[in-house]
Length: 350
Image (cartoon, rainbow, N blue to C red; front, side, top):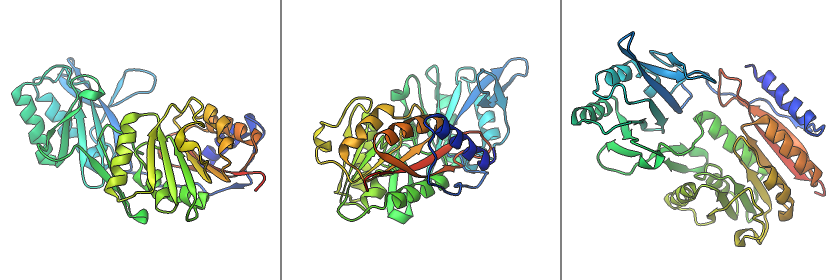
């Protein structure tokens, strides 16, 4: 979808949810259209009529599988290996019992997570290890739920991938099943823009809500006096602390909290905040936005993957004393209709 169309969608949602218009529209943020996608779920299906295994993406709103030989949108470490992957799966004893393969890429390593419905034979396990060795891939199995994911190749070392943010002198480590942004170029530019828009000053206290593994938290900590990252997923809280320690940051704290409830009385919130960043899931953060004014933040940056919930929540913030200063869209998923966006709010009495 052309980015002008994405901006139009966001503009219409702002108008619909409260007649809001930003003071400034910033230029769309774009990335390379090919080879950008670092995370995906590939479907796998054995088709008896063809006596072959299909590997590809499941079609939207149904269970049909679009078979592919190569995917130019995926990181080439994965996208160029679809045919070898299909051949691997077709040659395994468990060819009927592996319904999907999750893929994740870091800067230096890539991983495949095979969902195995039954225990694998020794020969199948060795075939996966050989595939990982041949293609320089980390290989994981998932026999049941997400908590059963475990690596079988390489045999040693921590189960982590990583990406760097050179602007902030940071290395971010993550498990292949962790949530990370799929488009590394857009992510780096998005973090730069968020920090720039917040205009962090030395000594300021900053809150990062829905902070995940610290993707925004740690860059903010390079600029601020103190940063508090808050996340509803306890595993991500642990990951954030790991990354803070890895990067030698002592001015950042990570906390777990129910972000659908009023958290203003939590000890970490008692001192208030000068600036706030919020990066919620698709459902948005309507409840959170009702509480944000309690902190007295001069500026708030809202990163969104859903223009409808951003616009709805923007209406809440405007009613509670903030002005929508600027907004823009980001081409996180080229070739799709998905709209990512960012908005900046300032307290009206500034």
